[in-house]
Image (cartoon, rainbow, N blue to C red; front, side, top):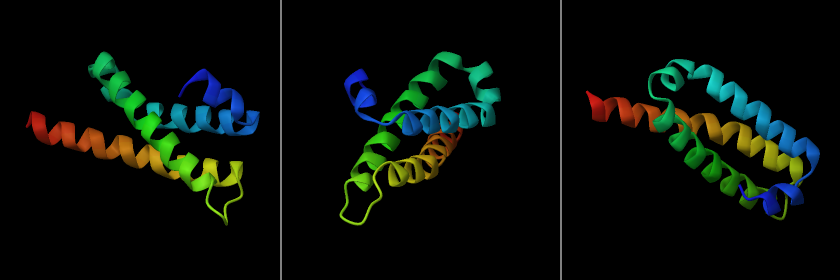
Length: 93
């Protein structure tokens, strides 16, 4: 995410994003160690996509702003990374 986008978010949302990201990275530590450059590129793409999806959800009429953003981001990022890693493993084998 851009620094402008991050500065527009609450500190709680930014902290939640960091916690979710750290958990996802810890979950896939083996891949981080095995192919670090590739993993960080993949992670950045997944993180950006999860943030876009969460941002859209946070602006729907019935959303609770940051709470909705955090909920959607926390649900979406692990799914995106898992799906990308699975696709990578299938392509390699």
